Length: 109
Image (tube, rainbow, N blue to C red):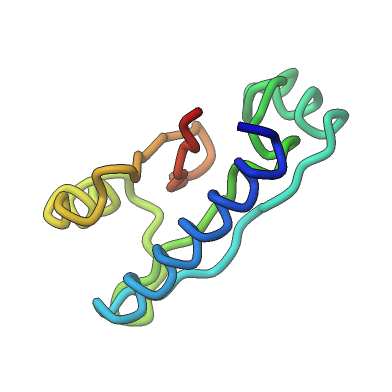
């Protein structure tokens, strides 16, 4: 699968996630979608990310989760909400960074 094909698949998956979240009462806003290789390196040096971030390939998007209009920053809330929706989220993973919680959808070859 080419990088372009992966990006297109990922974009469709993000669209599906956004529609699903809205229809199930969740609010999402974008955190970060694209990251330059230089920014990824700086984030890694400061302990806030990894140098080979999928953001640099446009294969990762950070979302902020809102429940009842309230931003959710607690890992336990993210895990509880997404664990109870496991049927939808077979391809959704949650990763906890030291500074925030993020959802990401890995694109498979």
